[in-house]
Amino acid sequence: MTTSTLSARRRGRPSARHLVLAPLSLLMVAPFLLMLVSSVMTKAELNRFPPPVLPERIDLTGYRELLSSSQFPRWFLNSVIVSGVIVVSQVVLCSMAGYAFARMRFAGRRLALALVIATTLIPFQLTVIPTFLIFHKIHLINTLGALIVPQLASALGVYLMTSFFQNFPRELEEAARIDGCSRFGVFFRVVLPVARPALAALAVITFIYAWNDLFWPLIAITSKERYTVQVGLTTFQGAHQADWPQIMAGTVLTTVPVLVVFIIGQRRFVQALAGAVKG
Image 1 (cartoon, rainbow, N blue to C red):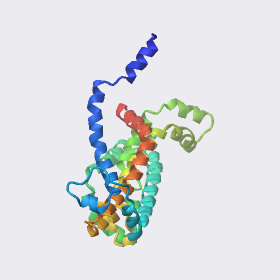
Image 2: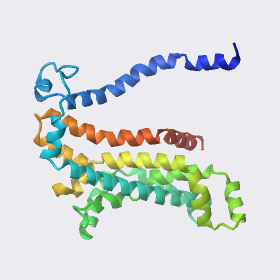
Image 3: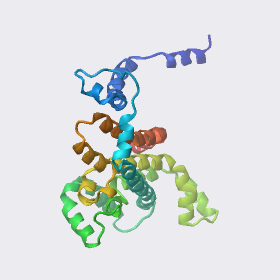
Image 4: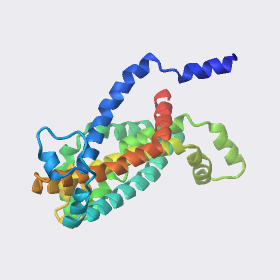
């Protein structure tokens, strides 16, 4: 038996870590499975005590009633618009700022980076009143712009991209400059294609935060048709406390985009975090 065959068998054999991680994984997945199963149960099954583990049959009444009796499709679209614009903005602005802090030499560079990172220590709750007053003065309250503008860039995104670009090999940039590329040409043609793991990680983190944000939209949005899915689901839940199939159906539809985005960007997300920790 060859050495490669033995090593392949050892890799396929479960280890002690798998015995610990498998039950933990089940504990993490259990709430999602319970949520999914509850969304296809009838109201009578959910109100039964104790409720059944599995439904007698798959019932999609909760989904149909949710989509027909509420503005959930509109709330979902609002969340897609807000999260999409924020992700694109942060990927562009944070990558440019991170590259500037990592590569360009200018007076006060380290102080400016330290101040940017220090803003993460200030809770948003402390700045929500002045933010609201400013947005009220410029007539952005109760618009989707009020949800987008505060998150066009983030200190976490700037720090993540700065850490990545500090480990980026300078030889590639110098070769491109010798070939006649400008600074912007080097950035867009050489640096960004290699920075896809970091950009994917930033996009995943930004999307999850923007999609799940509840505090600021609950304050800045007053019109029901401009609710995001989180605010809409919260108010809907308050009005339909006994209709658990609809509430669970809304929760499933709200969770699916986050899971899809994370699964798609999982590998690059891990690569980027590993590179940031190493740097």
